[in-house]
Length: 143
Image 1 (cartoon, rainbow, N blue to C red):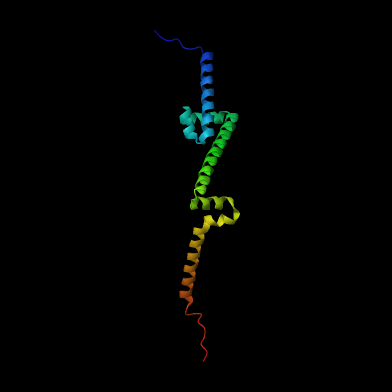
Image 2: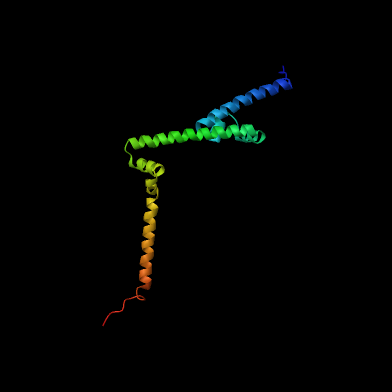
């Protein structure tokens, strides 16, 4: 005994309901973590489908971009919380990181290794020039 096919209008209605639920779940997941691949997996939607929906519907694309932005803000807040927790635990690296990214007078902390390397390179160049020109620019001895 064969199951009769749904009428076309009923089938479209079912697909529309399912897609609406999938889209809502996708938005929820993107707001949590902003990673499209993970959100698609959790929502049970292929990424290619989501990108097709985005191409077909500019309003949907705007909603996706908004959800991704909210997800990034969520992750940024979590990361900031971890850094602050480490600073409270008196972790010196966390304190340096926080200061170098949040206080202009400490910005150089992030570039200290670069400065040290640059100084070493400059000293090496000076030594090379001293060796190269040492016999050419001697002071004349007074008699």
